[in-house]
Image (cartoon, rainbow, N blue to C red; front, side, top):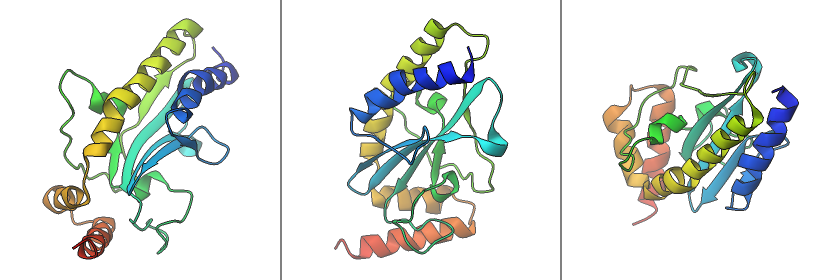
Length: 183
């Protein structure tokens, strides 16, 4: 399968059905996000220096919408990049029988895990099935996990499992400021 054919399948089997579930495209690319209150789930396609021929690369990111991006004081700045999000995950993190109980994992050095979907030399029916499976995982596993995340819980996770990176200190400030207005 060539890249153009994959992009068409990705749009019809993954992106468009998720848009029907409340996701929105980010810009003109293949990345999407879902906002529920202060919770934002992003599925960011990775290209540029992270591109790998014959593979579509993506990262699942979570952030609360009041967190400042690392290069701005404005939490509403767009676009949001992987490094702007405390949680950086892959689809494999949501596998298995049990509901995910994911702890915060510091990946703040510009290096994070990436999910690869191989499409070169793979039959279109197989790729289509893989994309439908990933879409189902987003709906049945990832969105419910996102809905379970609280501001206080995320603050606790970063404090407990963080590596004291400057971005973590910034997120801690933002969480504490937000929580101080909620009483």
